[in-house]
Image: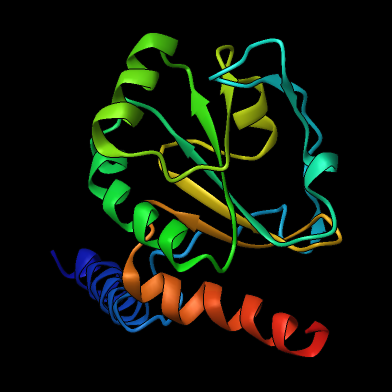
Length: 179
């Protein structure tokens, strides 16, 4: 019994130290994207409302935009939708949607029923584009600079707090200096 006391005591001490460290970590819950401060991945996807029209990130260069990955099957996307409508109404930065692995008719009905916050919605049936952007669960939102650089990633629901603390401070100073 005595030979197990020291290893058990050391294990318990290590477990307590790790628990306290994780509990008080300021970055807990933050997943850093490898895309940050790198060019936005290229894609060419059909638009939801007009499949003959192709949506490409290079067409958006020269201005800030939010790229929001969503799907009608996503519960958190429905919860986030009201906030996206407020973002559109604010007129600060356009929203570009990527409808991820979804049915086009369901997506169109969703936007008619709940309102359409997007300037344009691209359709990613295969999910390849979402993978290129590092998406693993919807919703995810990326802030892209006028130079086409990903400067922020929101994993999960875009909230009022994230909008005010993370997105507006990045977009507004640039708008003030260029305007």
